[in-house]
Length: 570
Image (cartoon, rainbow, N blue to C red):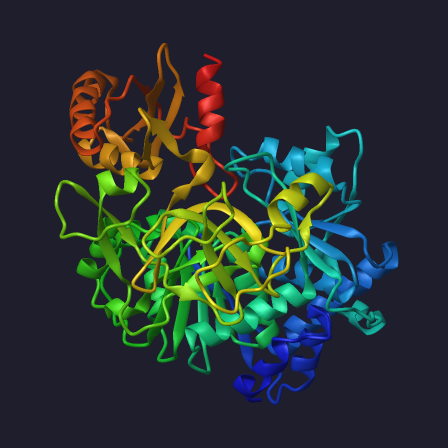
């Protein structure tokens, strides 16, 4: 089957994800081909292999069981860790005409409040899980007043597949609910249609110019949008898919590198920025000649992380693709699509504070940003003045607005927030041919376009404004990180609070795993000097925390607004 020849119909789909998946399976010429490998690391390293036919059968088994107990449109929560059963649960719900909600094993630390908020919002009557997570799931719900039906997928017999009944679906139906991580507000259920997801699959396919036959290696958590859509995309397309858990990677980053470089086949992966440095510190070099692309997303991509990865491994620079995405856009909005990548530029800090993105030679007066490339095909993006709603000129910082057939319809149970976020009309324009309707999404992300490259500078709600000048928290956090070895990697929260006469800068800093509290005072002095020198502001308070103590979202990001709220409440 020639997937490239099939891509055109994906951009104007008149069918559901389930119908697409089954259509592509029926066109498979080799259903006994192994397409899914689960790497399991215990006392021994083992691999569970599944053929295309076995994967399809287990999806239909799950769908048939769901059809026995619920009607089409029912919401189905998935509570498990990375595994084939997670994918079967997700696609099985789609095959049953139901709405999957990707979540996680309740044993995952620090996520109890997020899980409670999600169940309170969407009230799914069914939970699917696997053998590994079943006990934790039952324990979690034993204390709840309302208990959903819990189905452990491993126990379902293959014979159920024959009783599955195909469901008529529409491209406009809600395919699934993707809950936001809660980094800037309480979790919101993003309603994504079949059309949005299928379109983004085609957009990604075209933007990355996927080399076929492609192979995907992933340890990303499947409850995260990048993790689940990647897993579902490759399963639907029948591509080779190798999975492991986030814990497997973090404990031994070399496991990911070994799987990534194991076969002579065009191989792709997707990771957050921190994984670059972690792999560089702990993994051995390998033959990257068949690694065709590594998408880097979920958090800002740093020059230090890129350099450390390129210095540690014999890998072509163009393999790395810093990309910008949103749960509200299915997955990817922009990614590098020129031969020159990744592009990392240095911007004058003083000009950034004034809202202008001016590239200069690297110096103490500049800060580095990685370009997130260009919009994927059939996606519109504009940089907008949030006050006037007019598109700004290149080189001016504004809010990112996006528009396209891959966009979500809104947030579940939040009509006012849906209207404010998704129903915007662009004012004065700089680009020709931009849509004139009111379906522009205001993302809340700040950025500028310079020389055709998209540079993300921060979040509108996280922006620190002191003495009339703008400061981006991640830049200050990066300065703190580099100033002292007392600081734990990726464990700083910078925000402003109302002071006596003006806003004041506060830093919450986690102590490095091997550091002692006795070193805090000396490190604080070094950090104050570094922040004052680089940013022209002096921290009013530096609070040291134990490792893991700063609030994080369900996807592992620092939750600055929650951290600020807790600080103010001290």
